[in-house]
Amino acid sequence: MKMTRMLRVSMSFAFGAAMVLTLLAGSSAFAVEPVHKGVDMWMTVSGMARTSFAKEPIPAGFFCDGSQPFTGTVTFKGAPLATEPARALGDIDTVVRRLDDAVFDEKGHATTRIQLMALSLISTAPIETSCGKYNVAVHLDGEQPTTTMRILRTSALGGSYSAPLALNVKAVFTPFTGDPSARRELTTHIDLGPSTNSVWMYLNAPQYKGAVRIDTHGTGRADTLLPAASNFIPGVTPAVFKGEPTKPTQASTVIACPVGQTPYQACHCDPTSTDPNQSSAGCDHLHCIWTCVATQQEQVTGN
Image 1: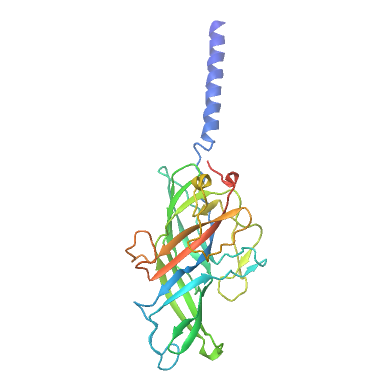
Image 2 (image 1 turned 135 degrees about the vertical axis):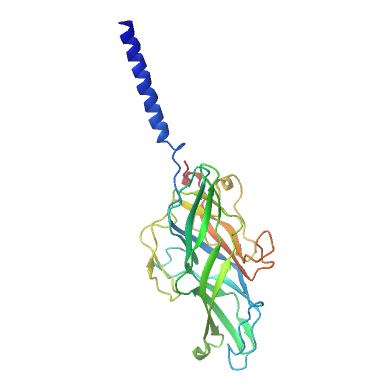
């Protein structure tokens, strides 16, 4: 009788221990949520996107017969992407697509391929050439190369990442006078090193809802459907909820985030730059961008 009671107690304990282990194995302490494939959306900081032609001048005769080589710098601002529904993404001008789910290993490392999906920049002012003034617009051109984004999960809520970019672009030069016959196009390839402030967090609230189409060709017409919203937001870490949001670097910079969201900045620079902070020093190409993030901590989801 006593042995039977002991056996029942032992079986009950074993069953309870098994149930605890099962619950723990299925809990967030053991299951790390992957970063799902999707898109990251950015707004270009006006005046903080630049391309220098000092090392690779636009050749003589490009703008008109006898025009001098152009070795100057073009400074850009973002032009909101055309979307359907209209203004569905606000002032977003740059979209980067993560092509694969990023699954973390036991060390918290994961990778995914990334590719530019859309880009819309215009010059902040006309450039001066030996043939007169030109406005400049930049969009993606054809099939885009892919690069590798490396993601590090340093806490239950997020971590850091490294994401160099490669893009094929078309620059359209339109004469300030409006003469269509003087319109010129230039295609080029640009490599940008990893950005500063490369941090991320899981985000529960989607950056967009429903079916949204965007202009990926610079035609002014929405042509491509965005994938489903993801669980990843770049450029911000949960620690920022304890402090003040990042402020624009220039007094004239106006970042239009939706109500309840705040902007955070990151800068990509030419990988040949010798500047450790990826500033404009030594950069042939500089692209500083903002993302809008919900400020309520309950929007964060972790494991």
